Image (cartoon, rainbow, N blue to C red; front, side):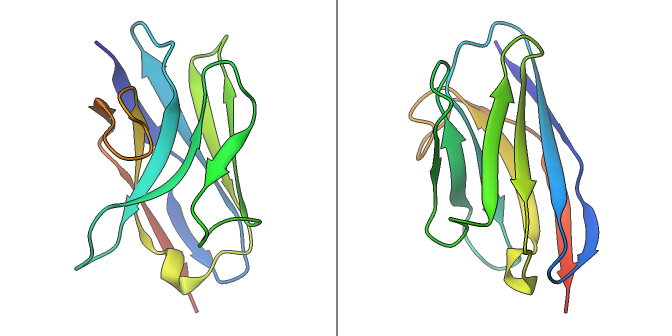
Length: 117
């Protein structure tokens, strides 16, 4: 069993940056990722990273602006978000295991990111 806890969300102006943090407890050798859900929209994939690979995989909408990374010693994954846009406003969820880009096994509770224009 894996428990995921997100932090780092908040309110930022367009063009600004935020860093989300996901802390995992329990056995975690899984690929991990981030999803987001805006009001009235379905949850969508944002980024993912493997257990051993340092290379991230991104949705087209965030490619070049967001960077996913992980520290396995700290059981933590990060999402650095730069050049934020109002359309990035959403609840961001950490995910792990399963097919992490589509059907993860584990979810965090989410953290709100609001980008003002």
